[in-house]
Image (tube, rainbow, N blue to C red; front, side, top):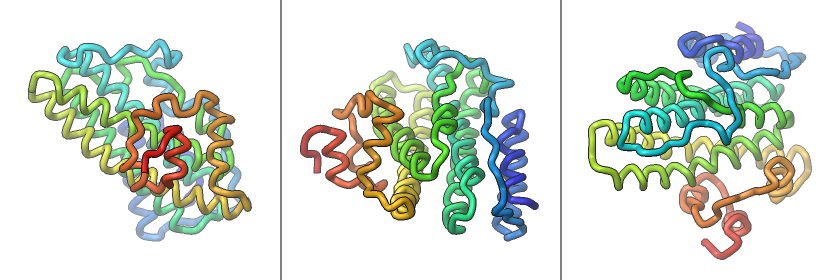
Length: 271
């Protein structure tokens, strides 16, 4: 089995079930060391995300708002939005393994492990959607995460933007969602959503940590200091850290952010 060719096919899977089934077979072969690594591999530049055939893509500002979380429609919109993040994260992890050739084996171990986690997270959310009578693809989505992968074609920028910015932002956002949910009248579905998000939050810390490790590696390879992170984020996200007051300081520290980085984001002393 050719490692990069199989990842290329995985990244172009045309359905959720196909992607999950293909990944299970691929990952089993990978762990059994039944892979051929062709370091002459040239990665494709993907023009469209793998979900474009079964999700309607619209501008981020037009995606349905997650209002009234006690109502079925509000819960569907919330779960669908998070499921879309997780599905996009599957492809981001796979693309990270596919796009960057000749790295230490631990790098590929890490991002395939992340992909496996993201698949499990997605399936947990999909199960809740189905309990509400919905499917992934029923609600409009945006391309923001896919576009981030299009723009970041070097290891340094990919590790800065995807795990250390986008995924780390999730460490800040998820506790706020959980806080809102916990204030709602108790119900079986609300309890299930809370339990699912708590699992995802805990496991995403390790994903950001992996990104931190490989960002440092890329900095060493490029001969740059780690504070280049802020230059990269400013390049792609000029508005930067929009809600510094909501930084999940402890989770970010666990995931590898230094106190000086966190204080730059928060614009005041946090450690």
